[in-house]
Image (tube, rainbow, N blue to C red; front, side, top):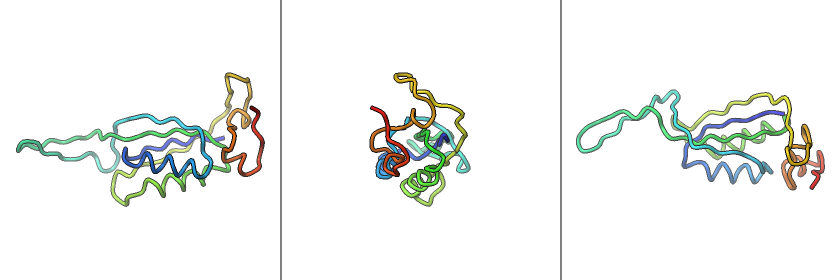
Length: 129
């Protein structure tokens, strides 16, 4: 299992969510964050004076998924979020040691499963209700 953590432009969020839903990624967390990467921020003007905004608003998306679905999810995010300009975002991928669904006590892949999710569509498993 892997955790995918993506930082994208605010305006790309709906397109990214739609792209992930289309491939069967059901569960995710989304956070509003501020930061910058290579672009280092932006110079803004207001009433004749300039100032630097170095922490830009971004959206952080966290998804935990089966390892064999990572590339498909990365492809969906990058195609939906890419403008070709600096600040499009970045994706980090981490290993996940264990997952436990609190309600049922399910562990591992079974704890990740949802009806009609990407693994169910593949026929890898059938989730318990």
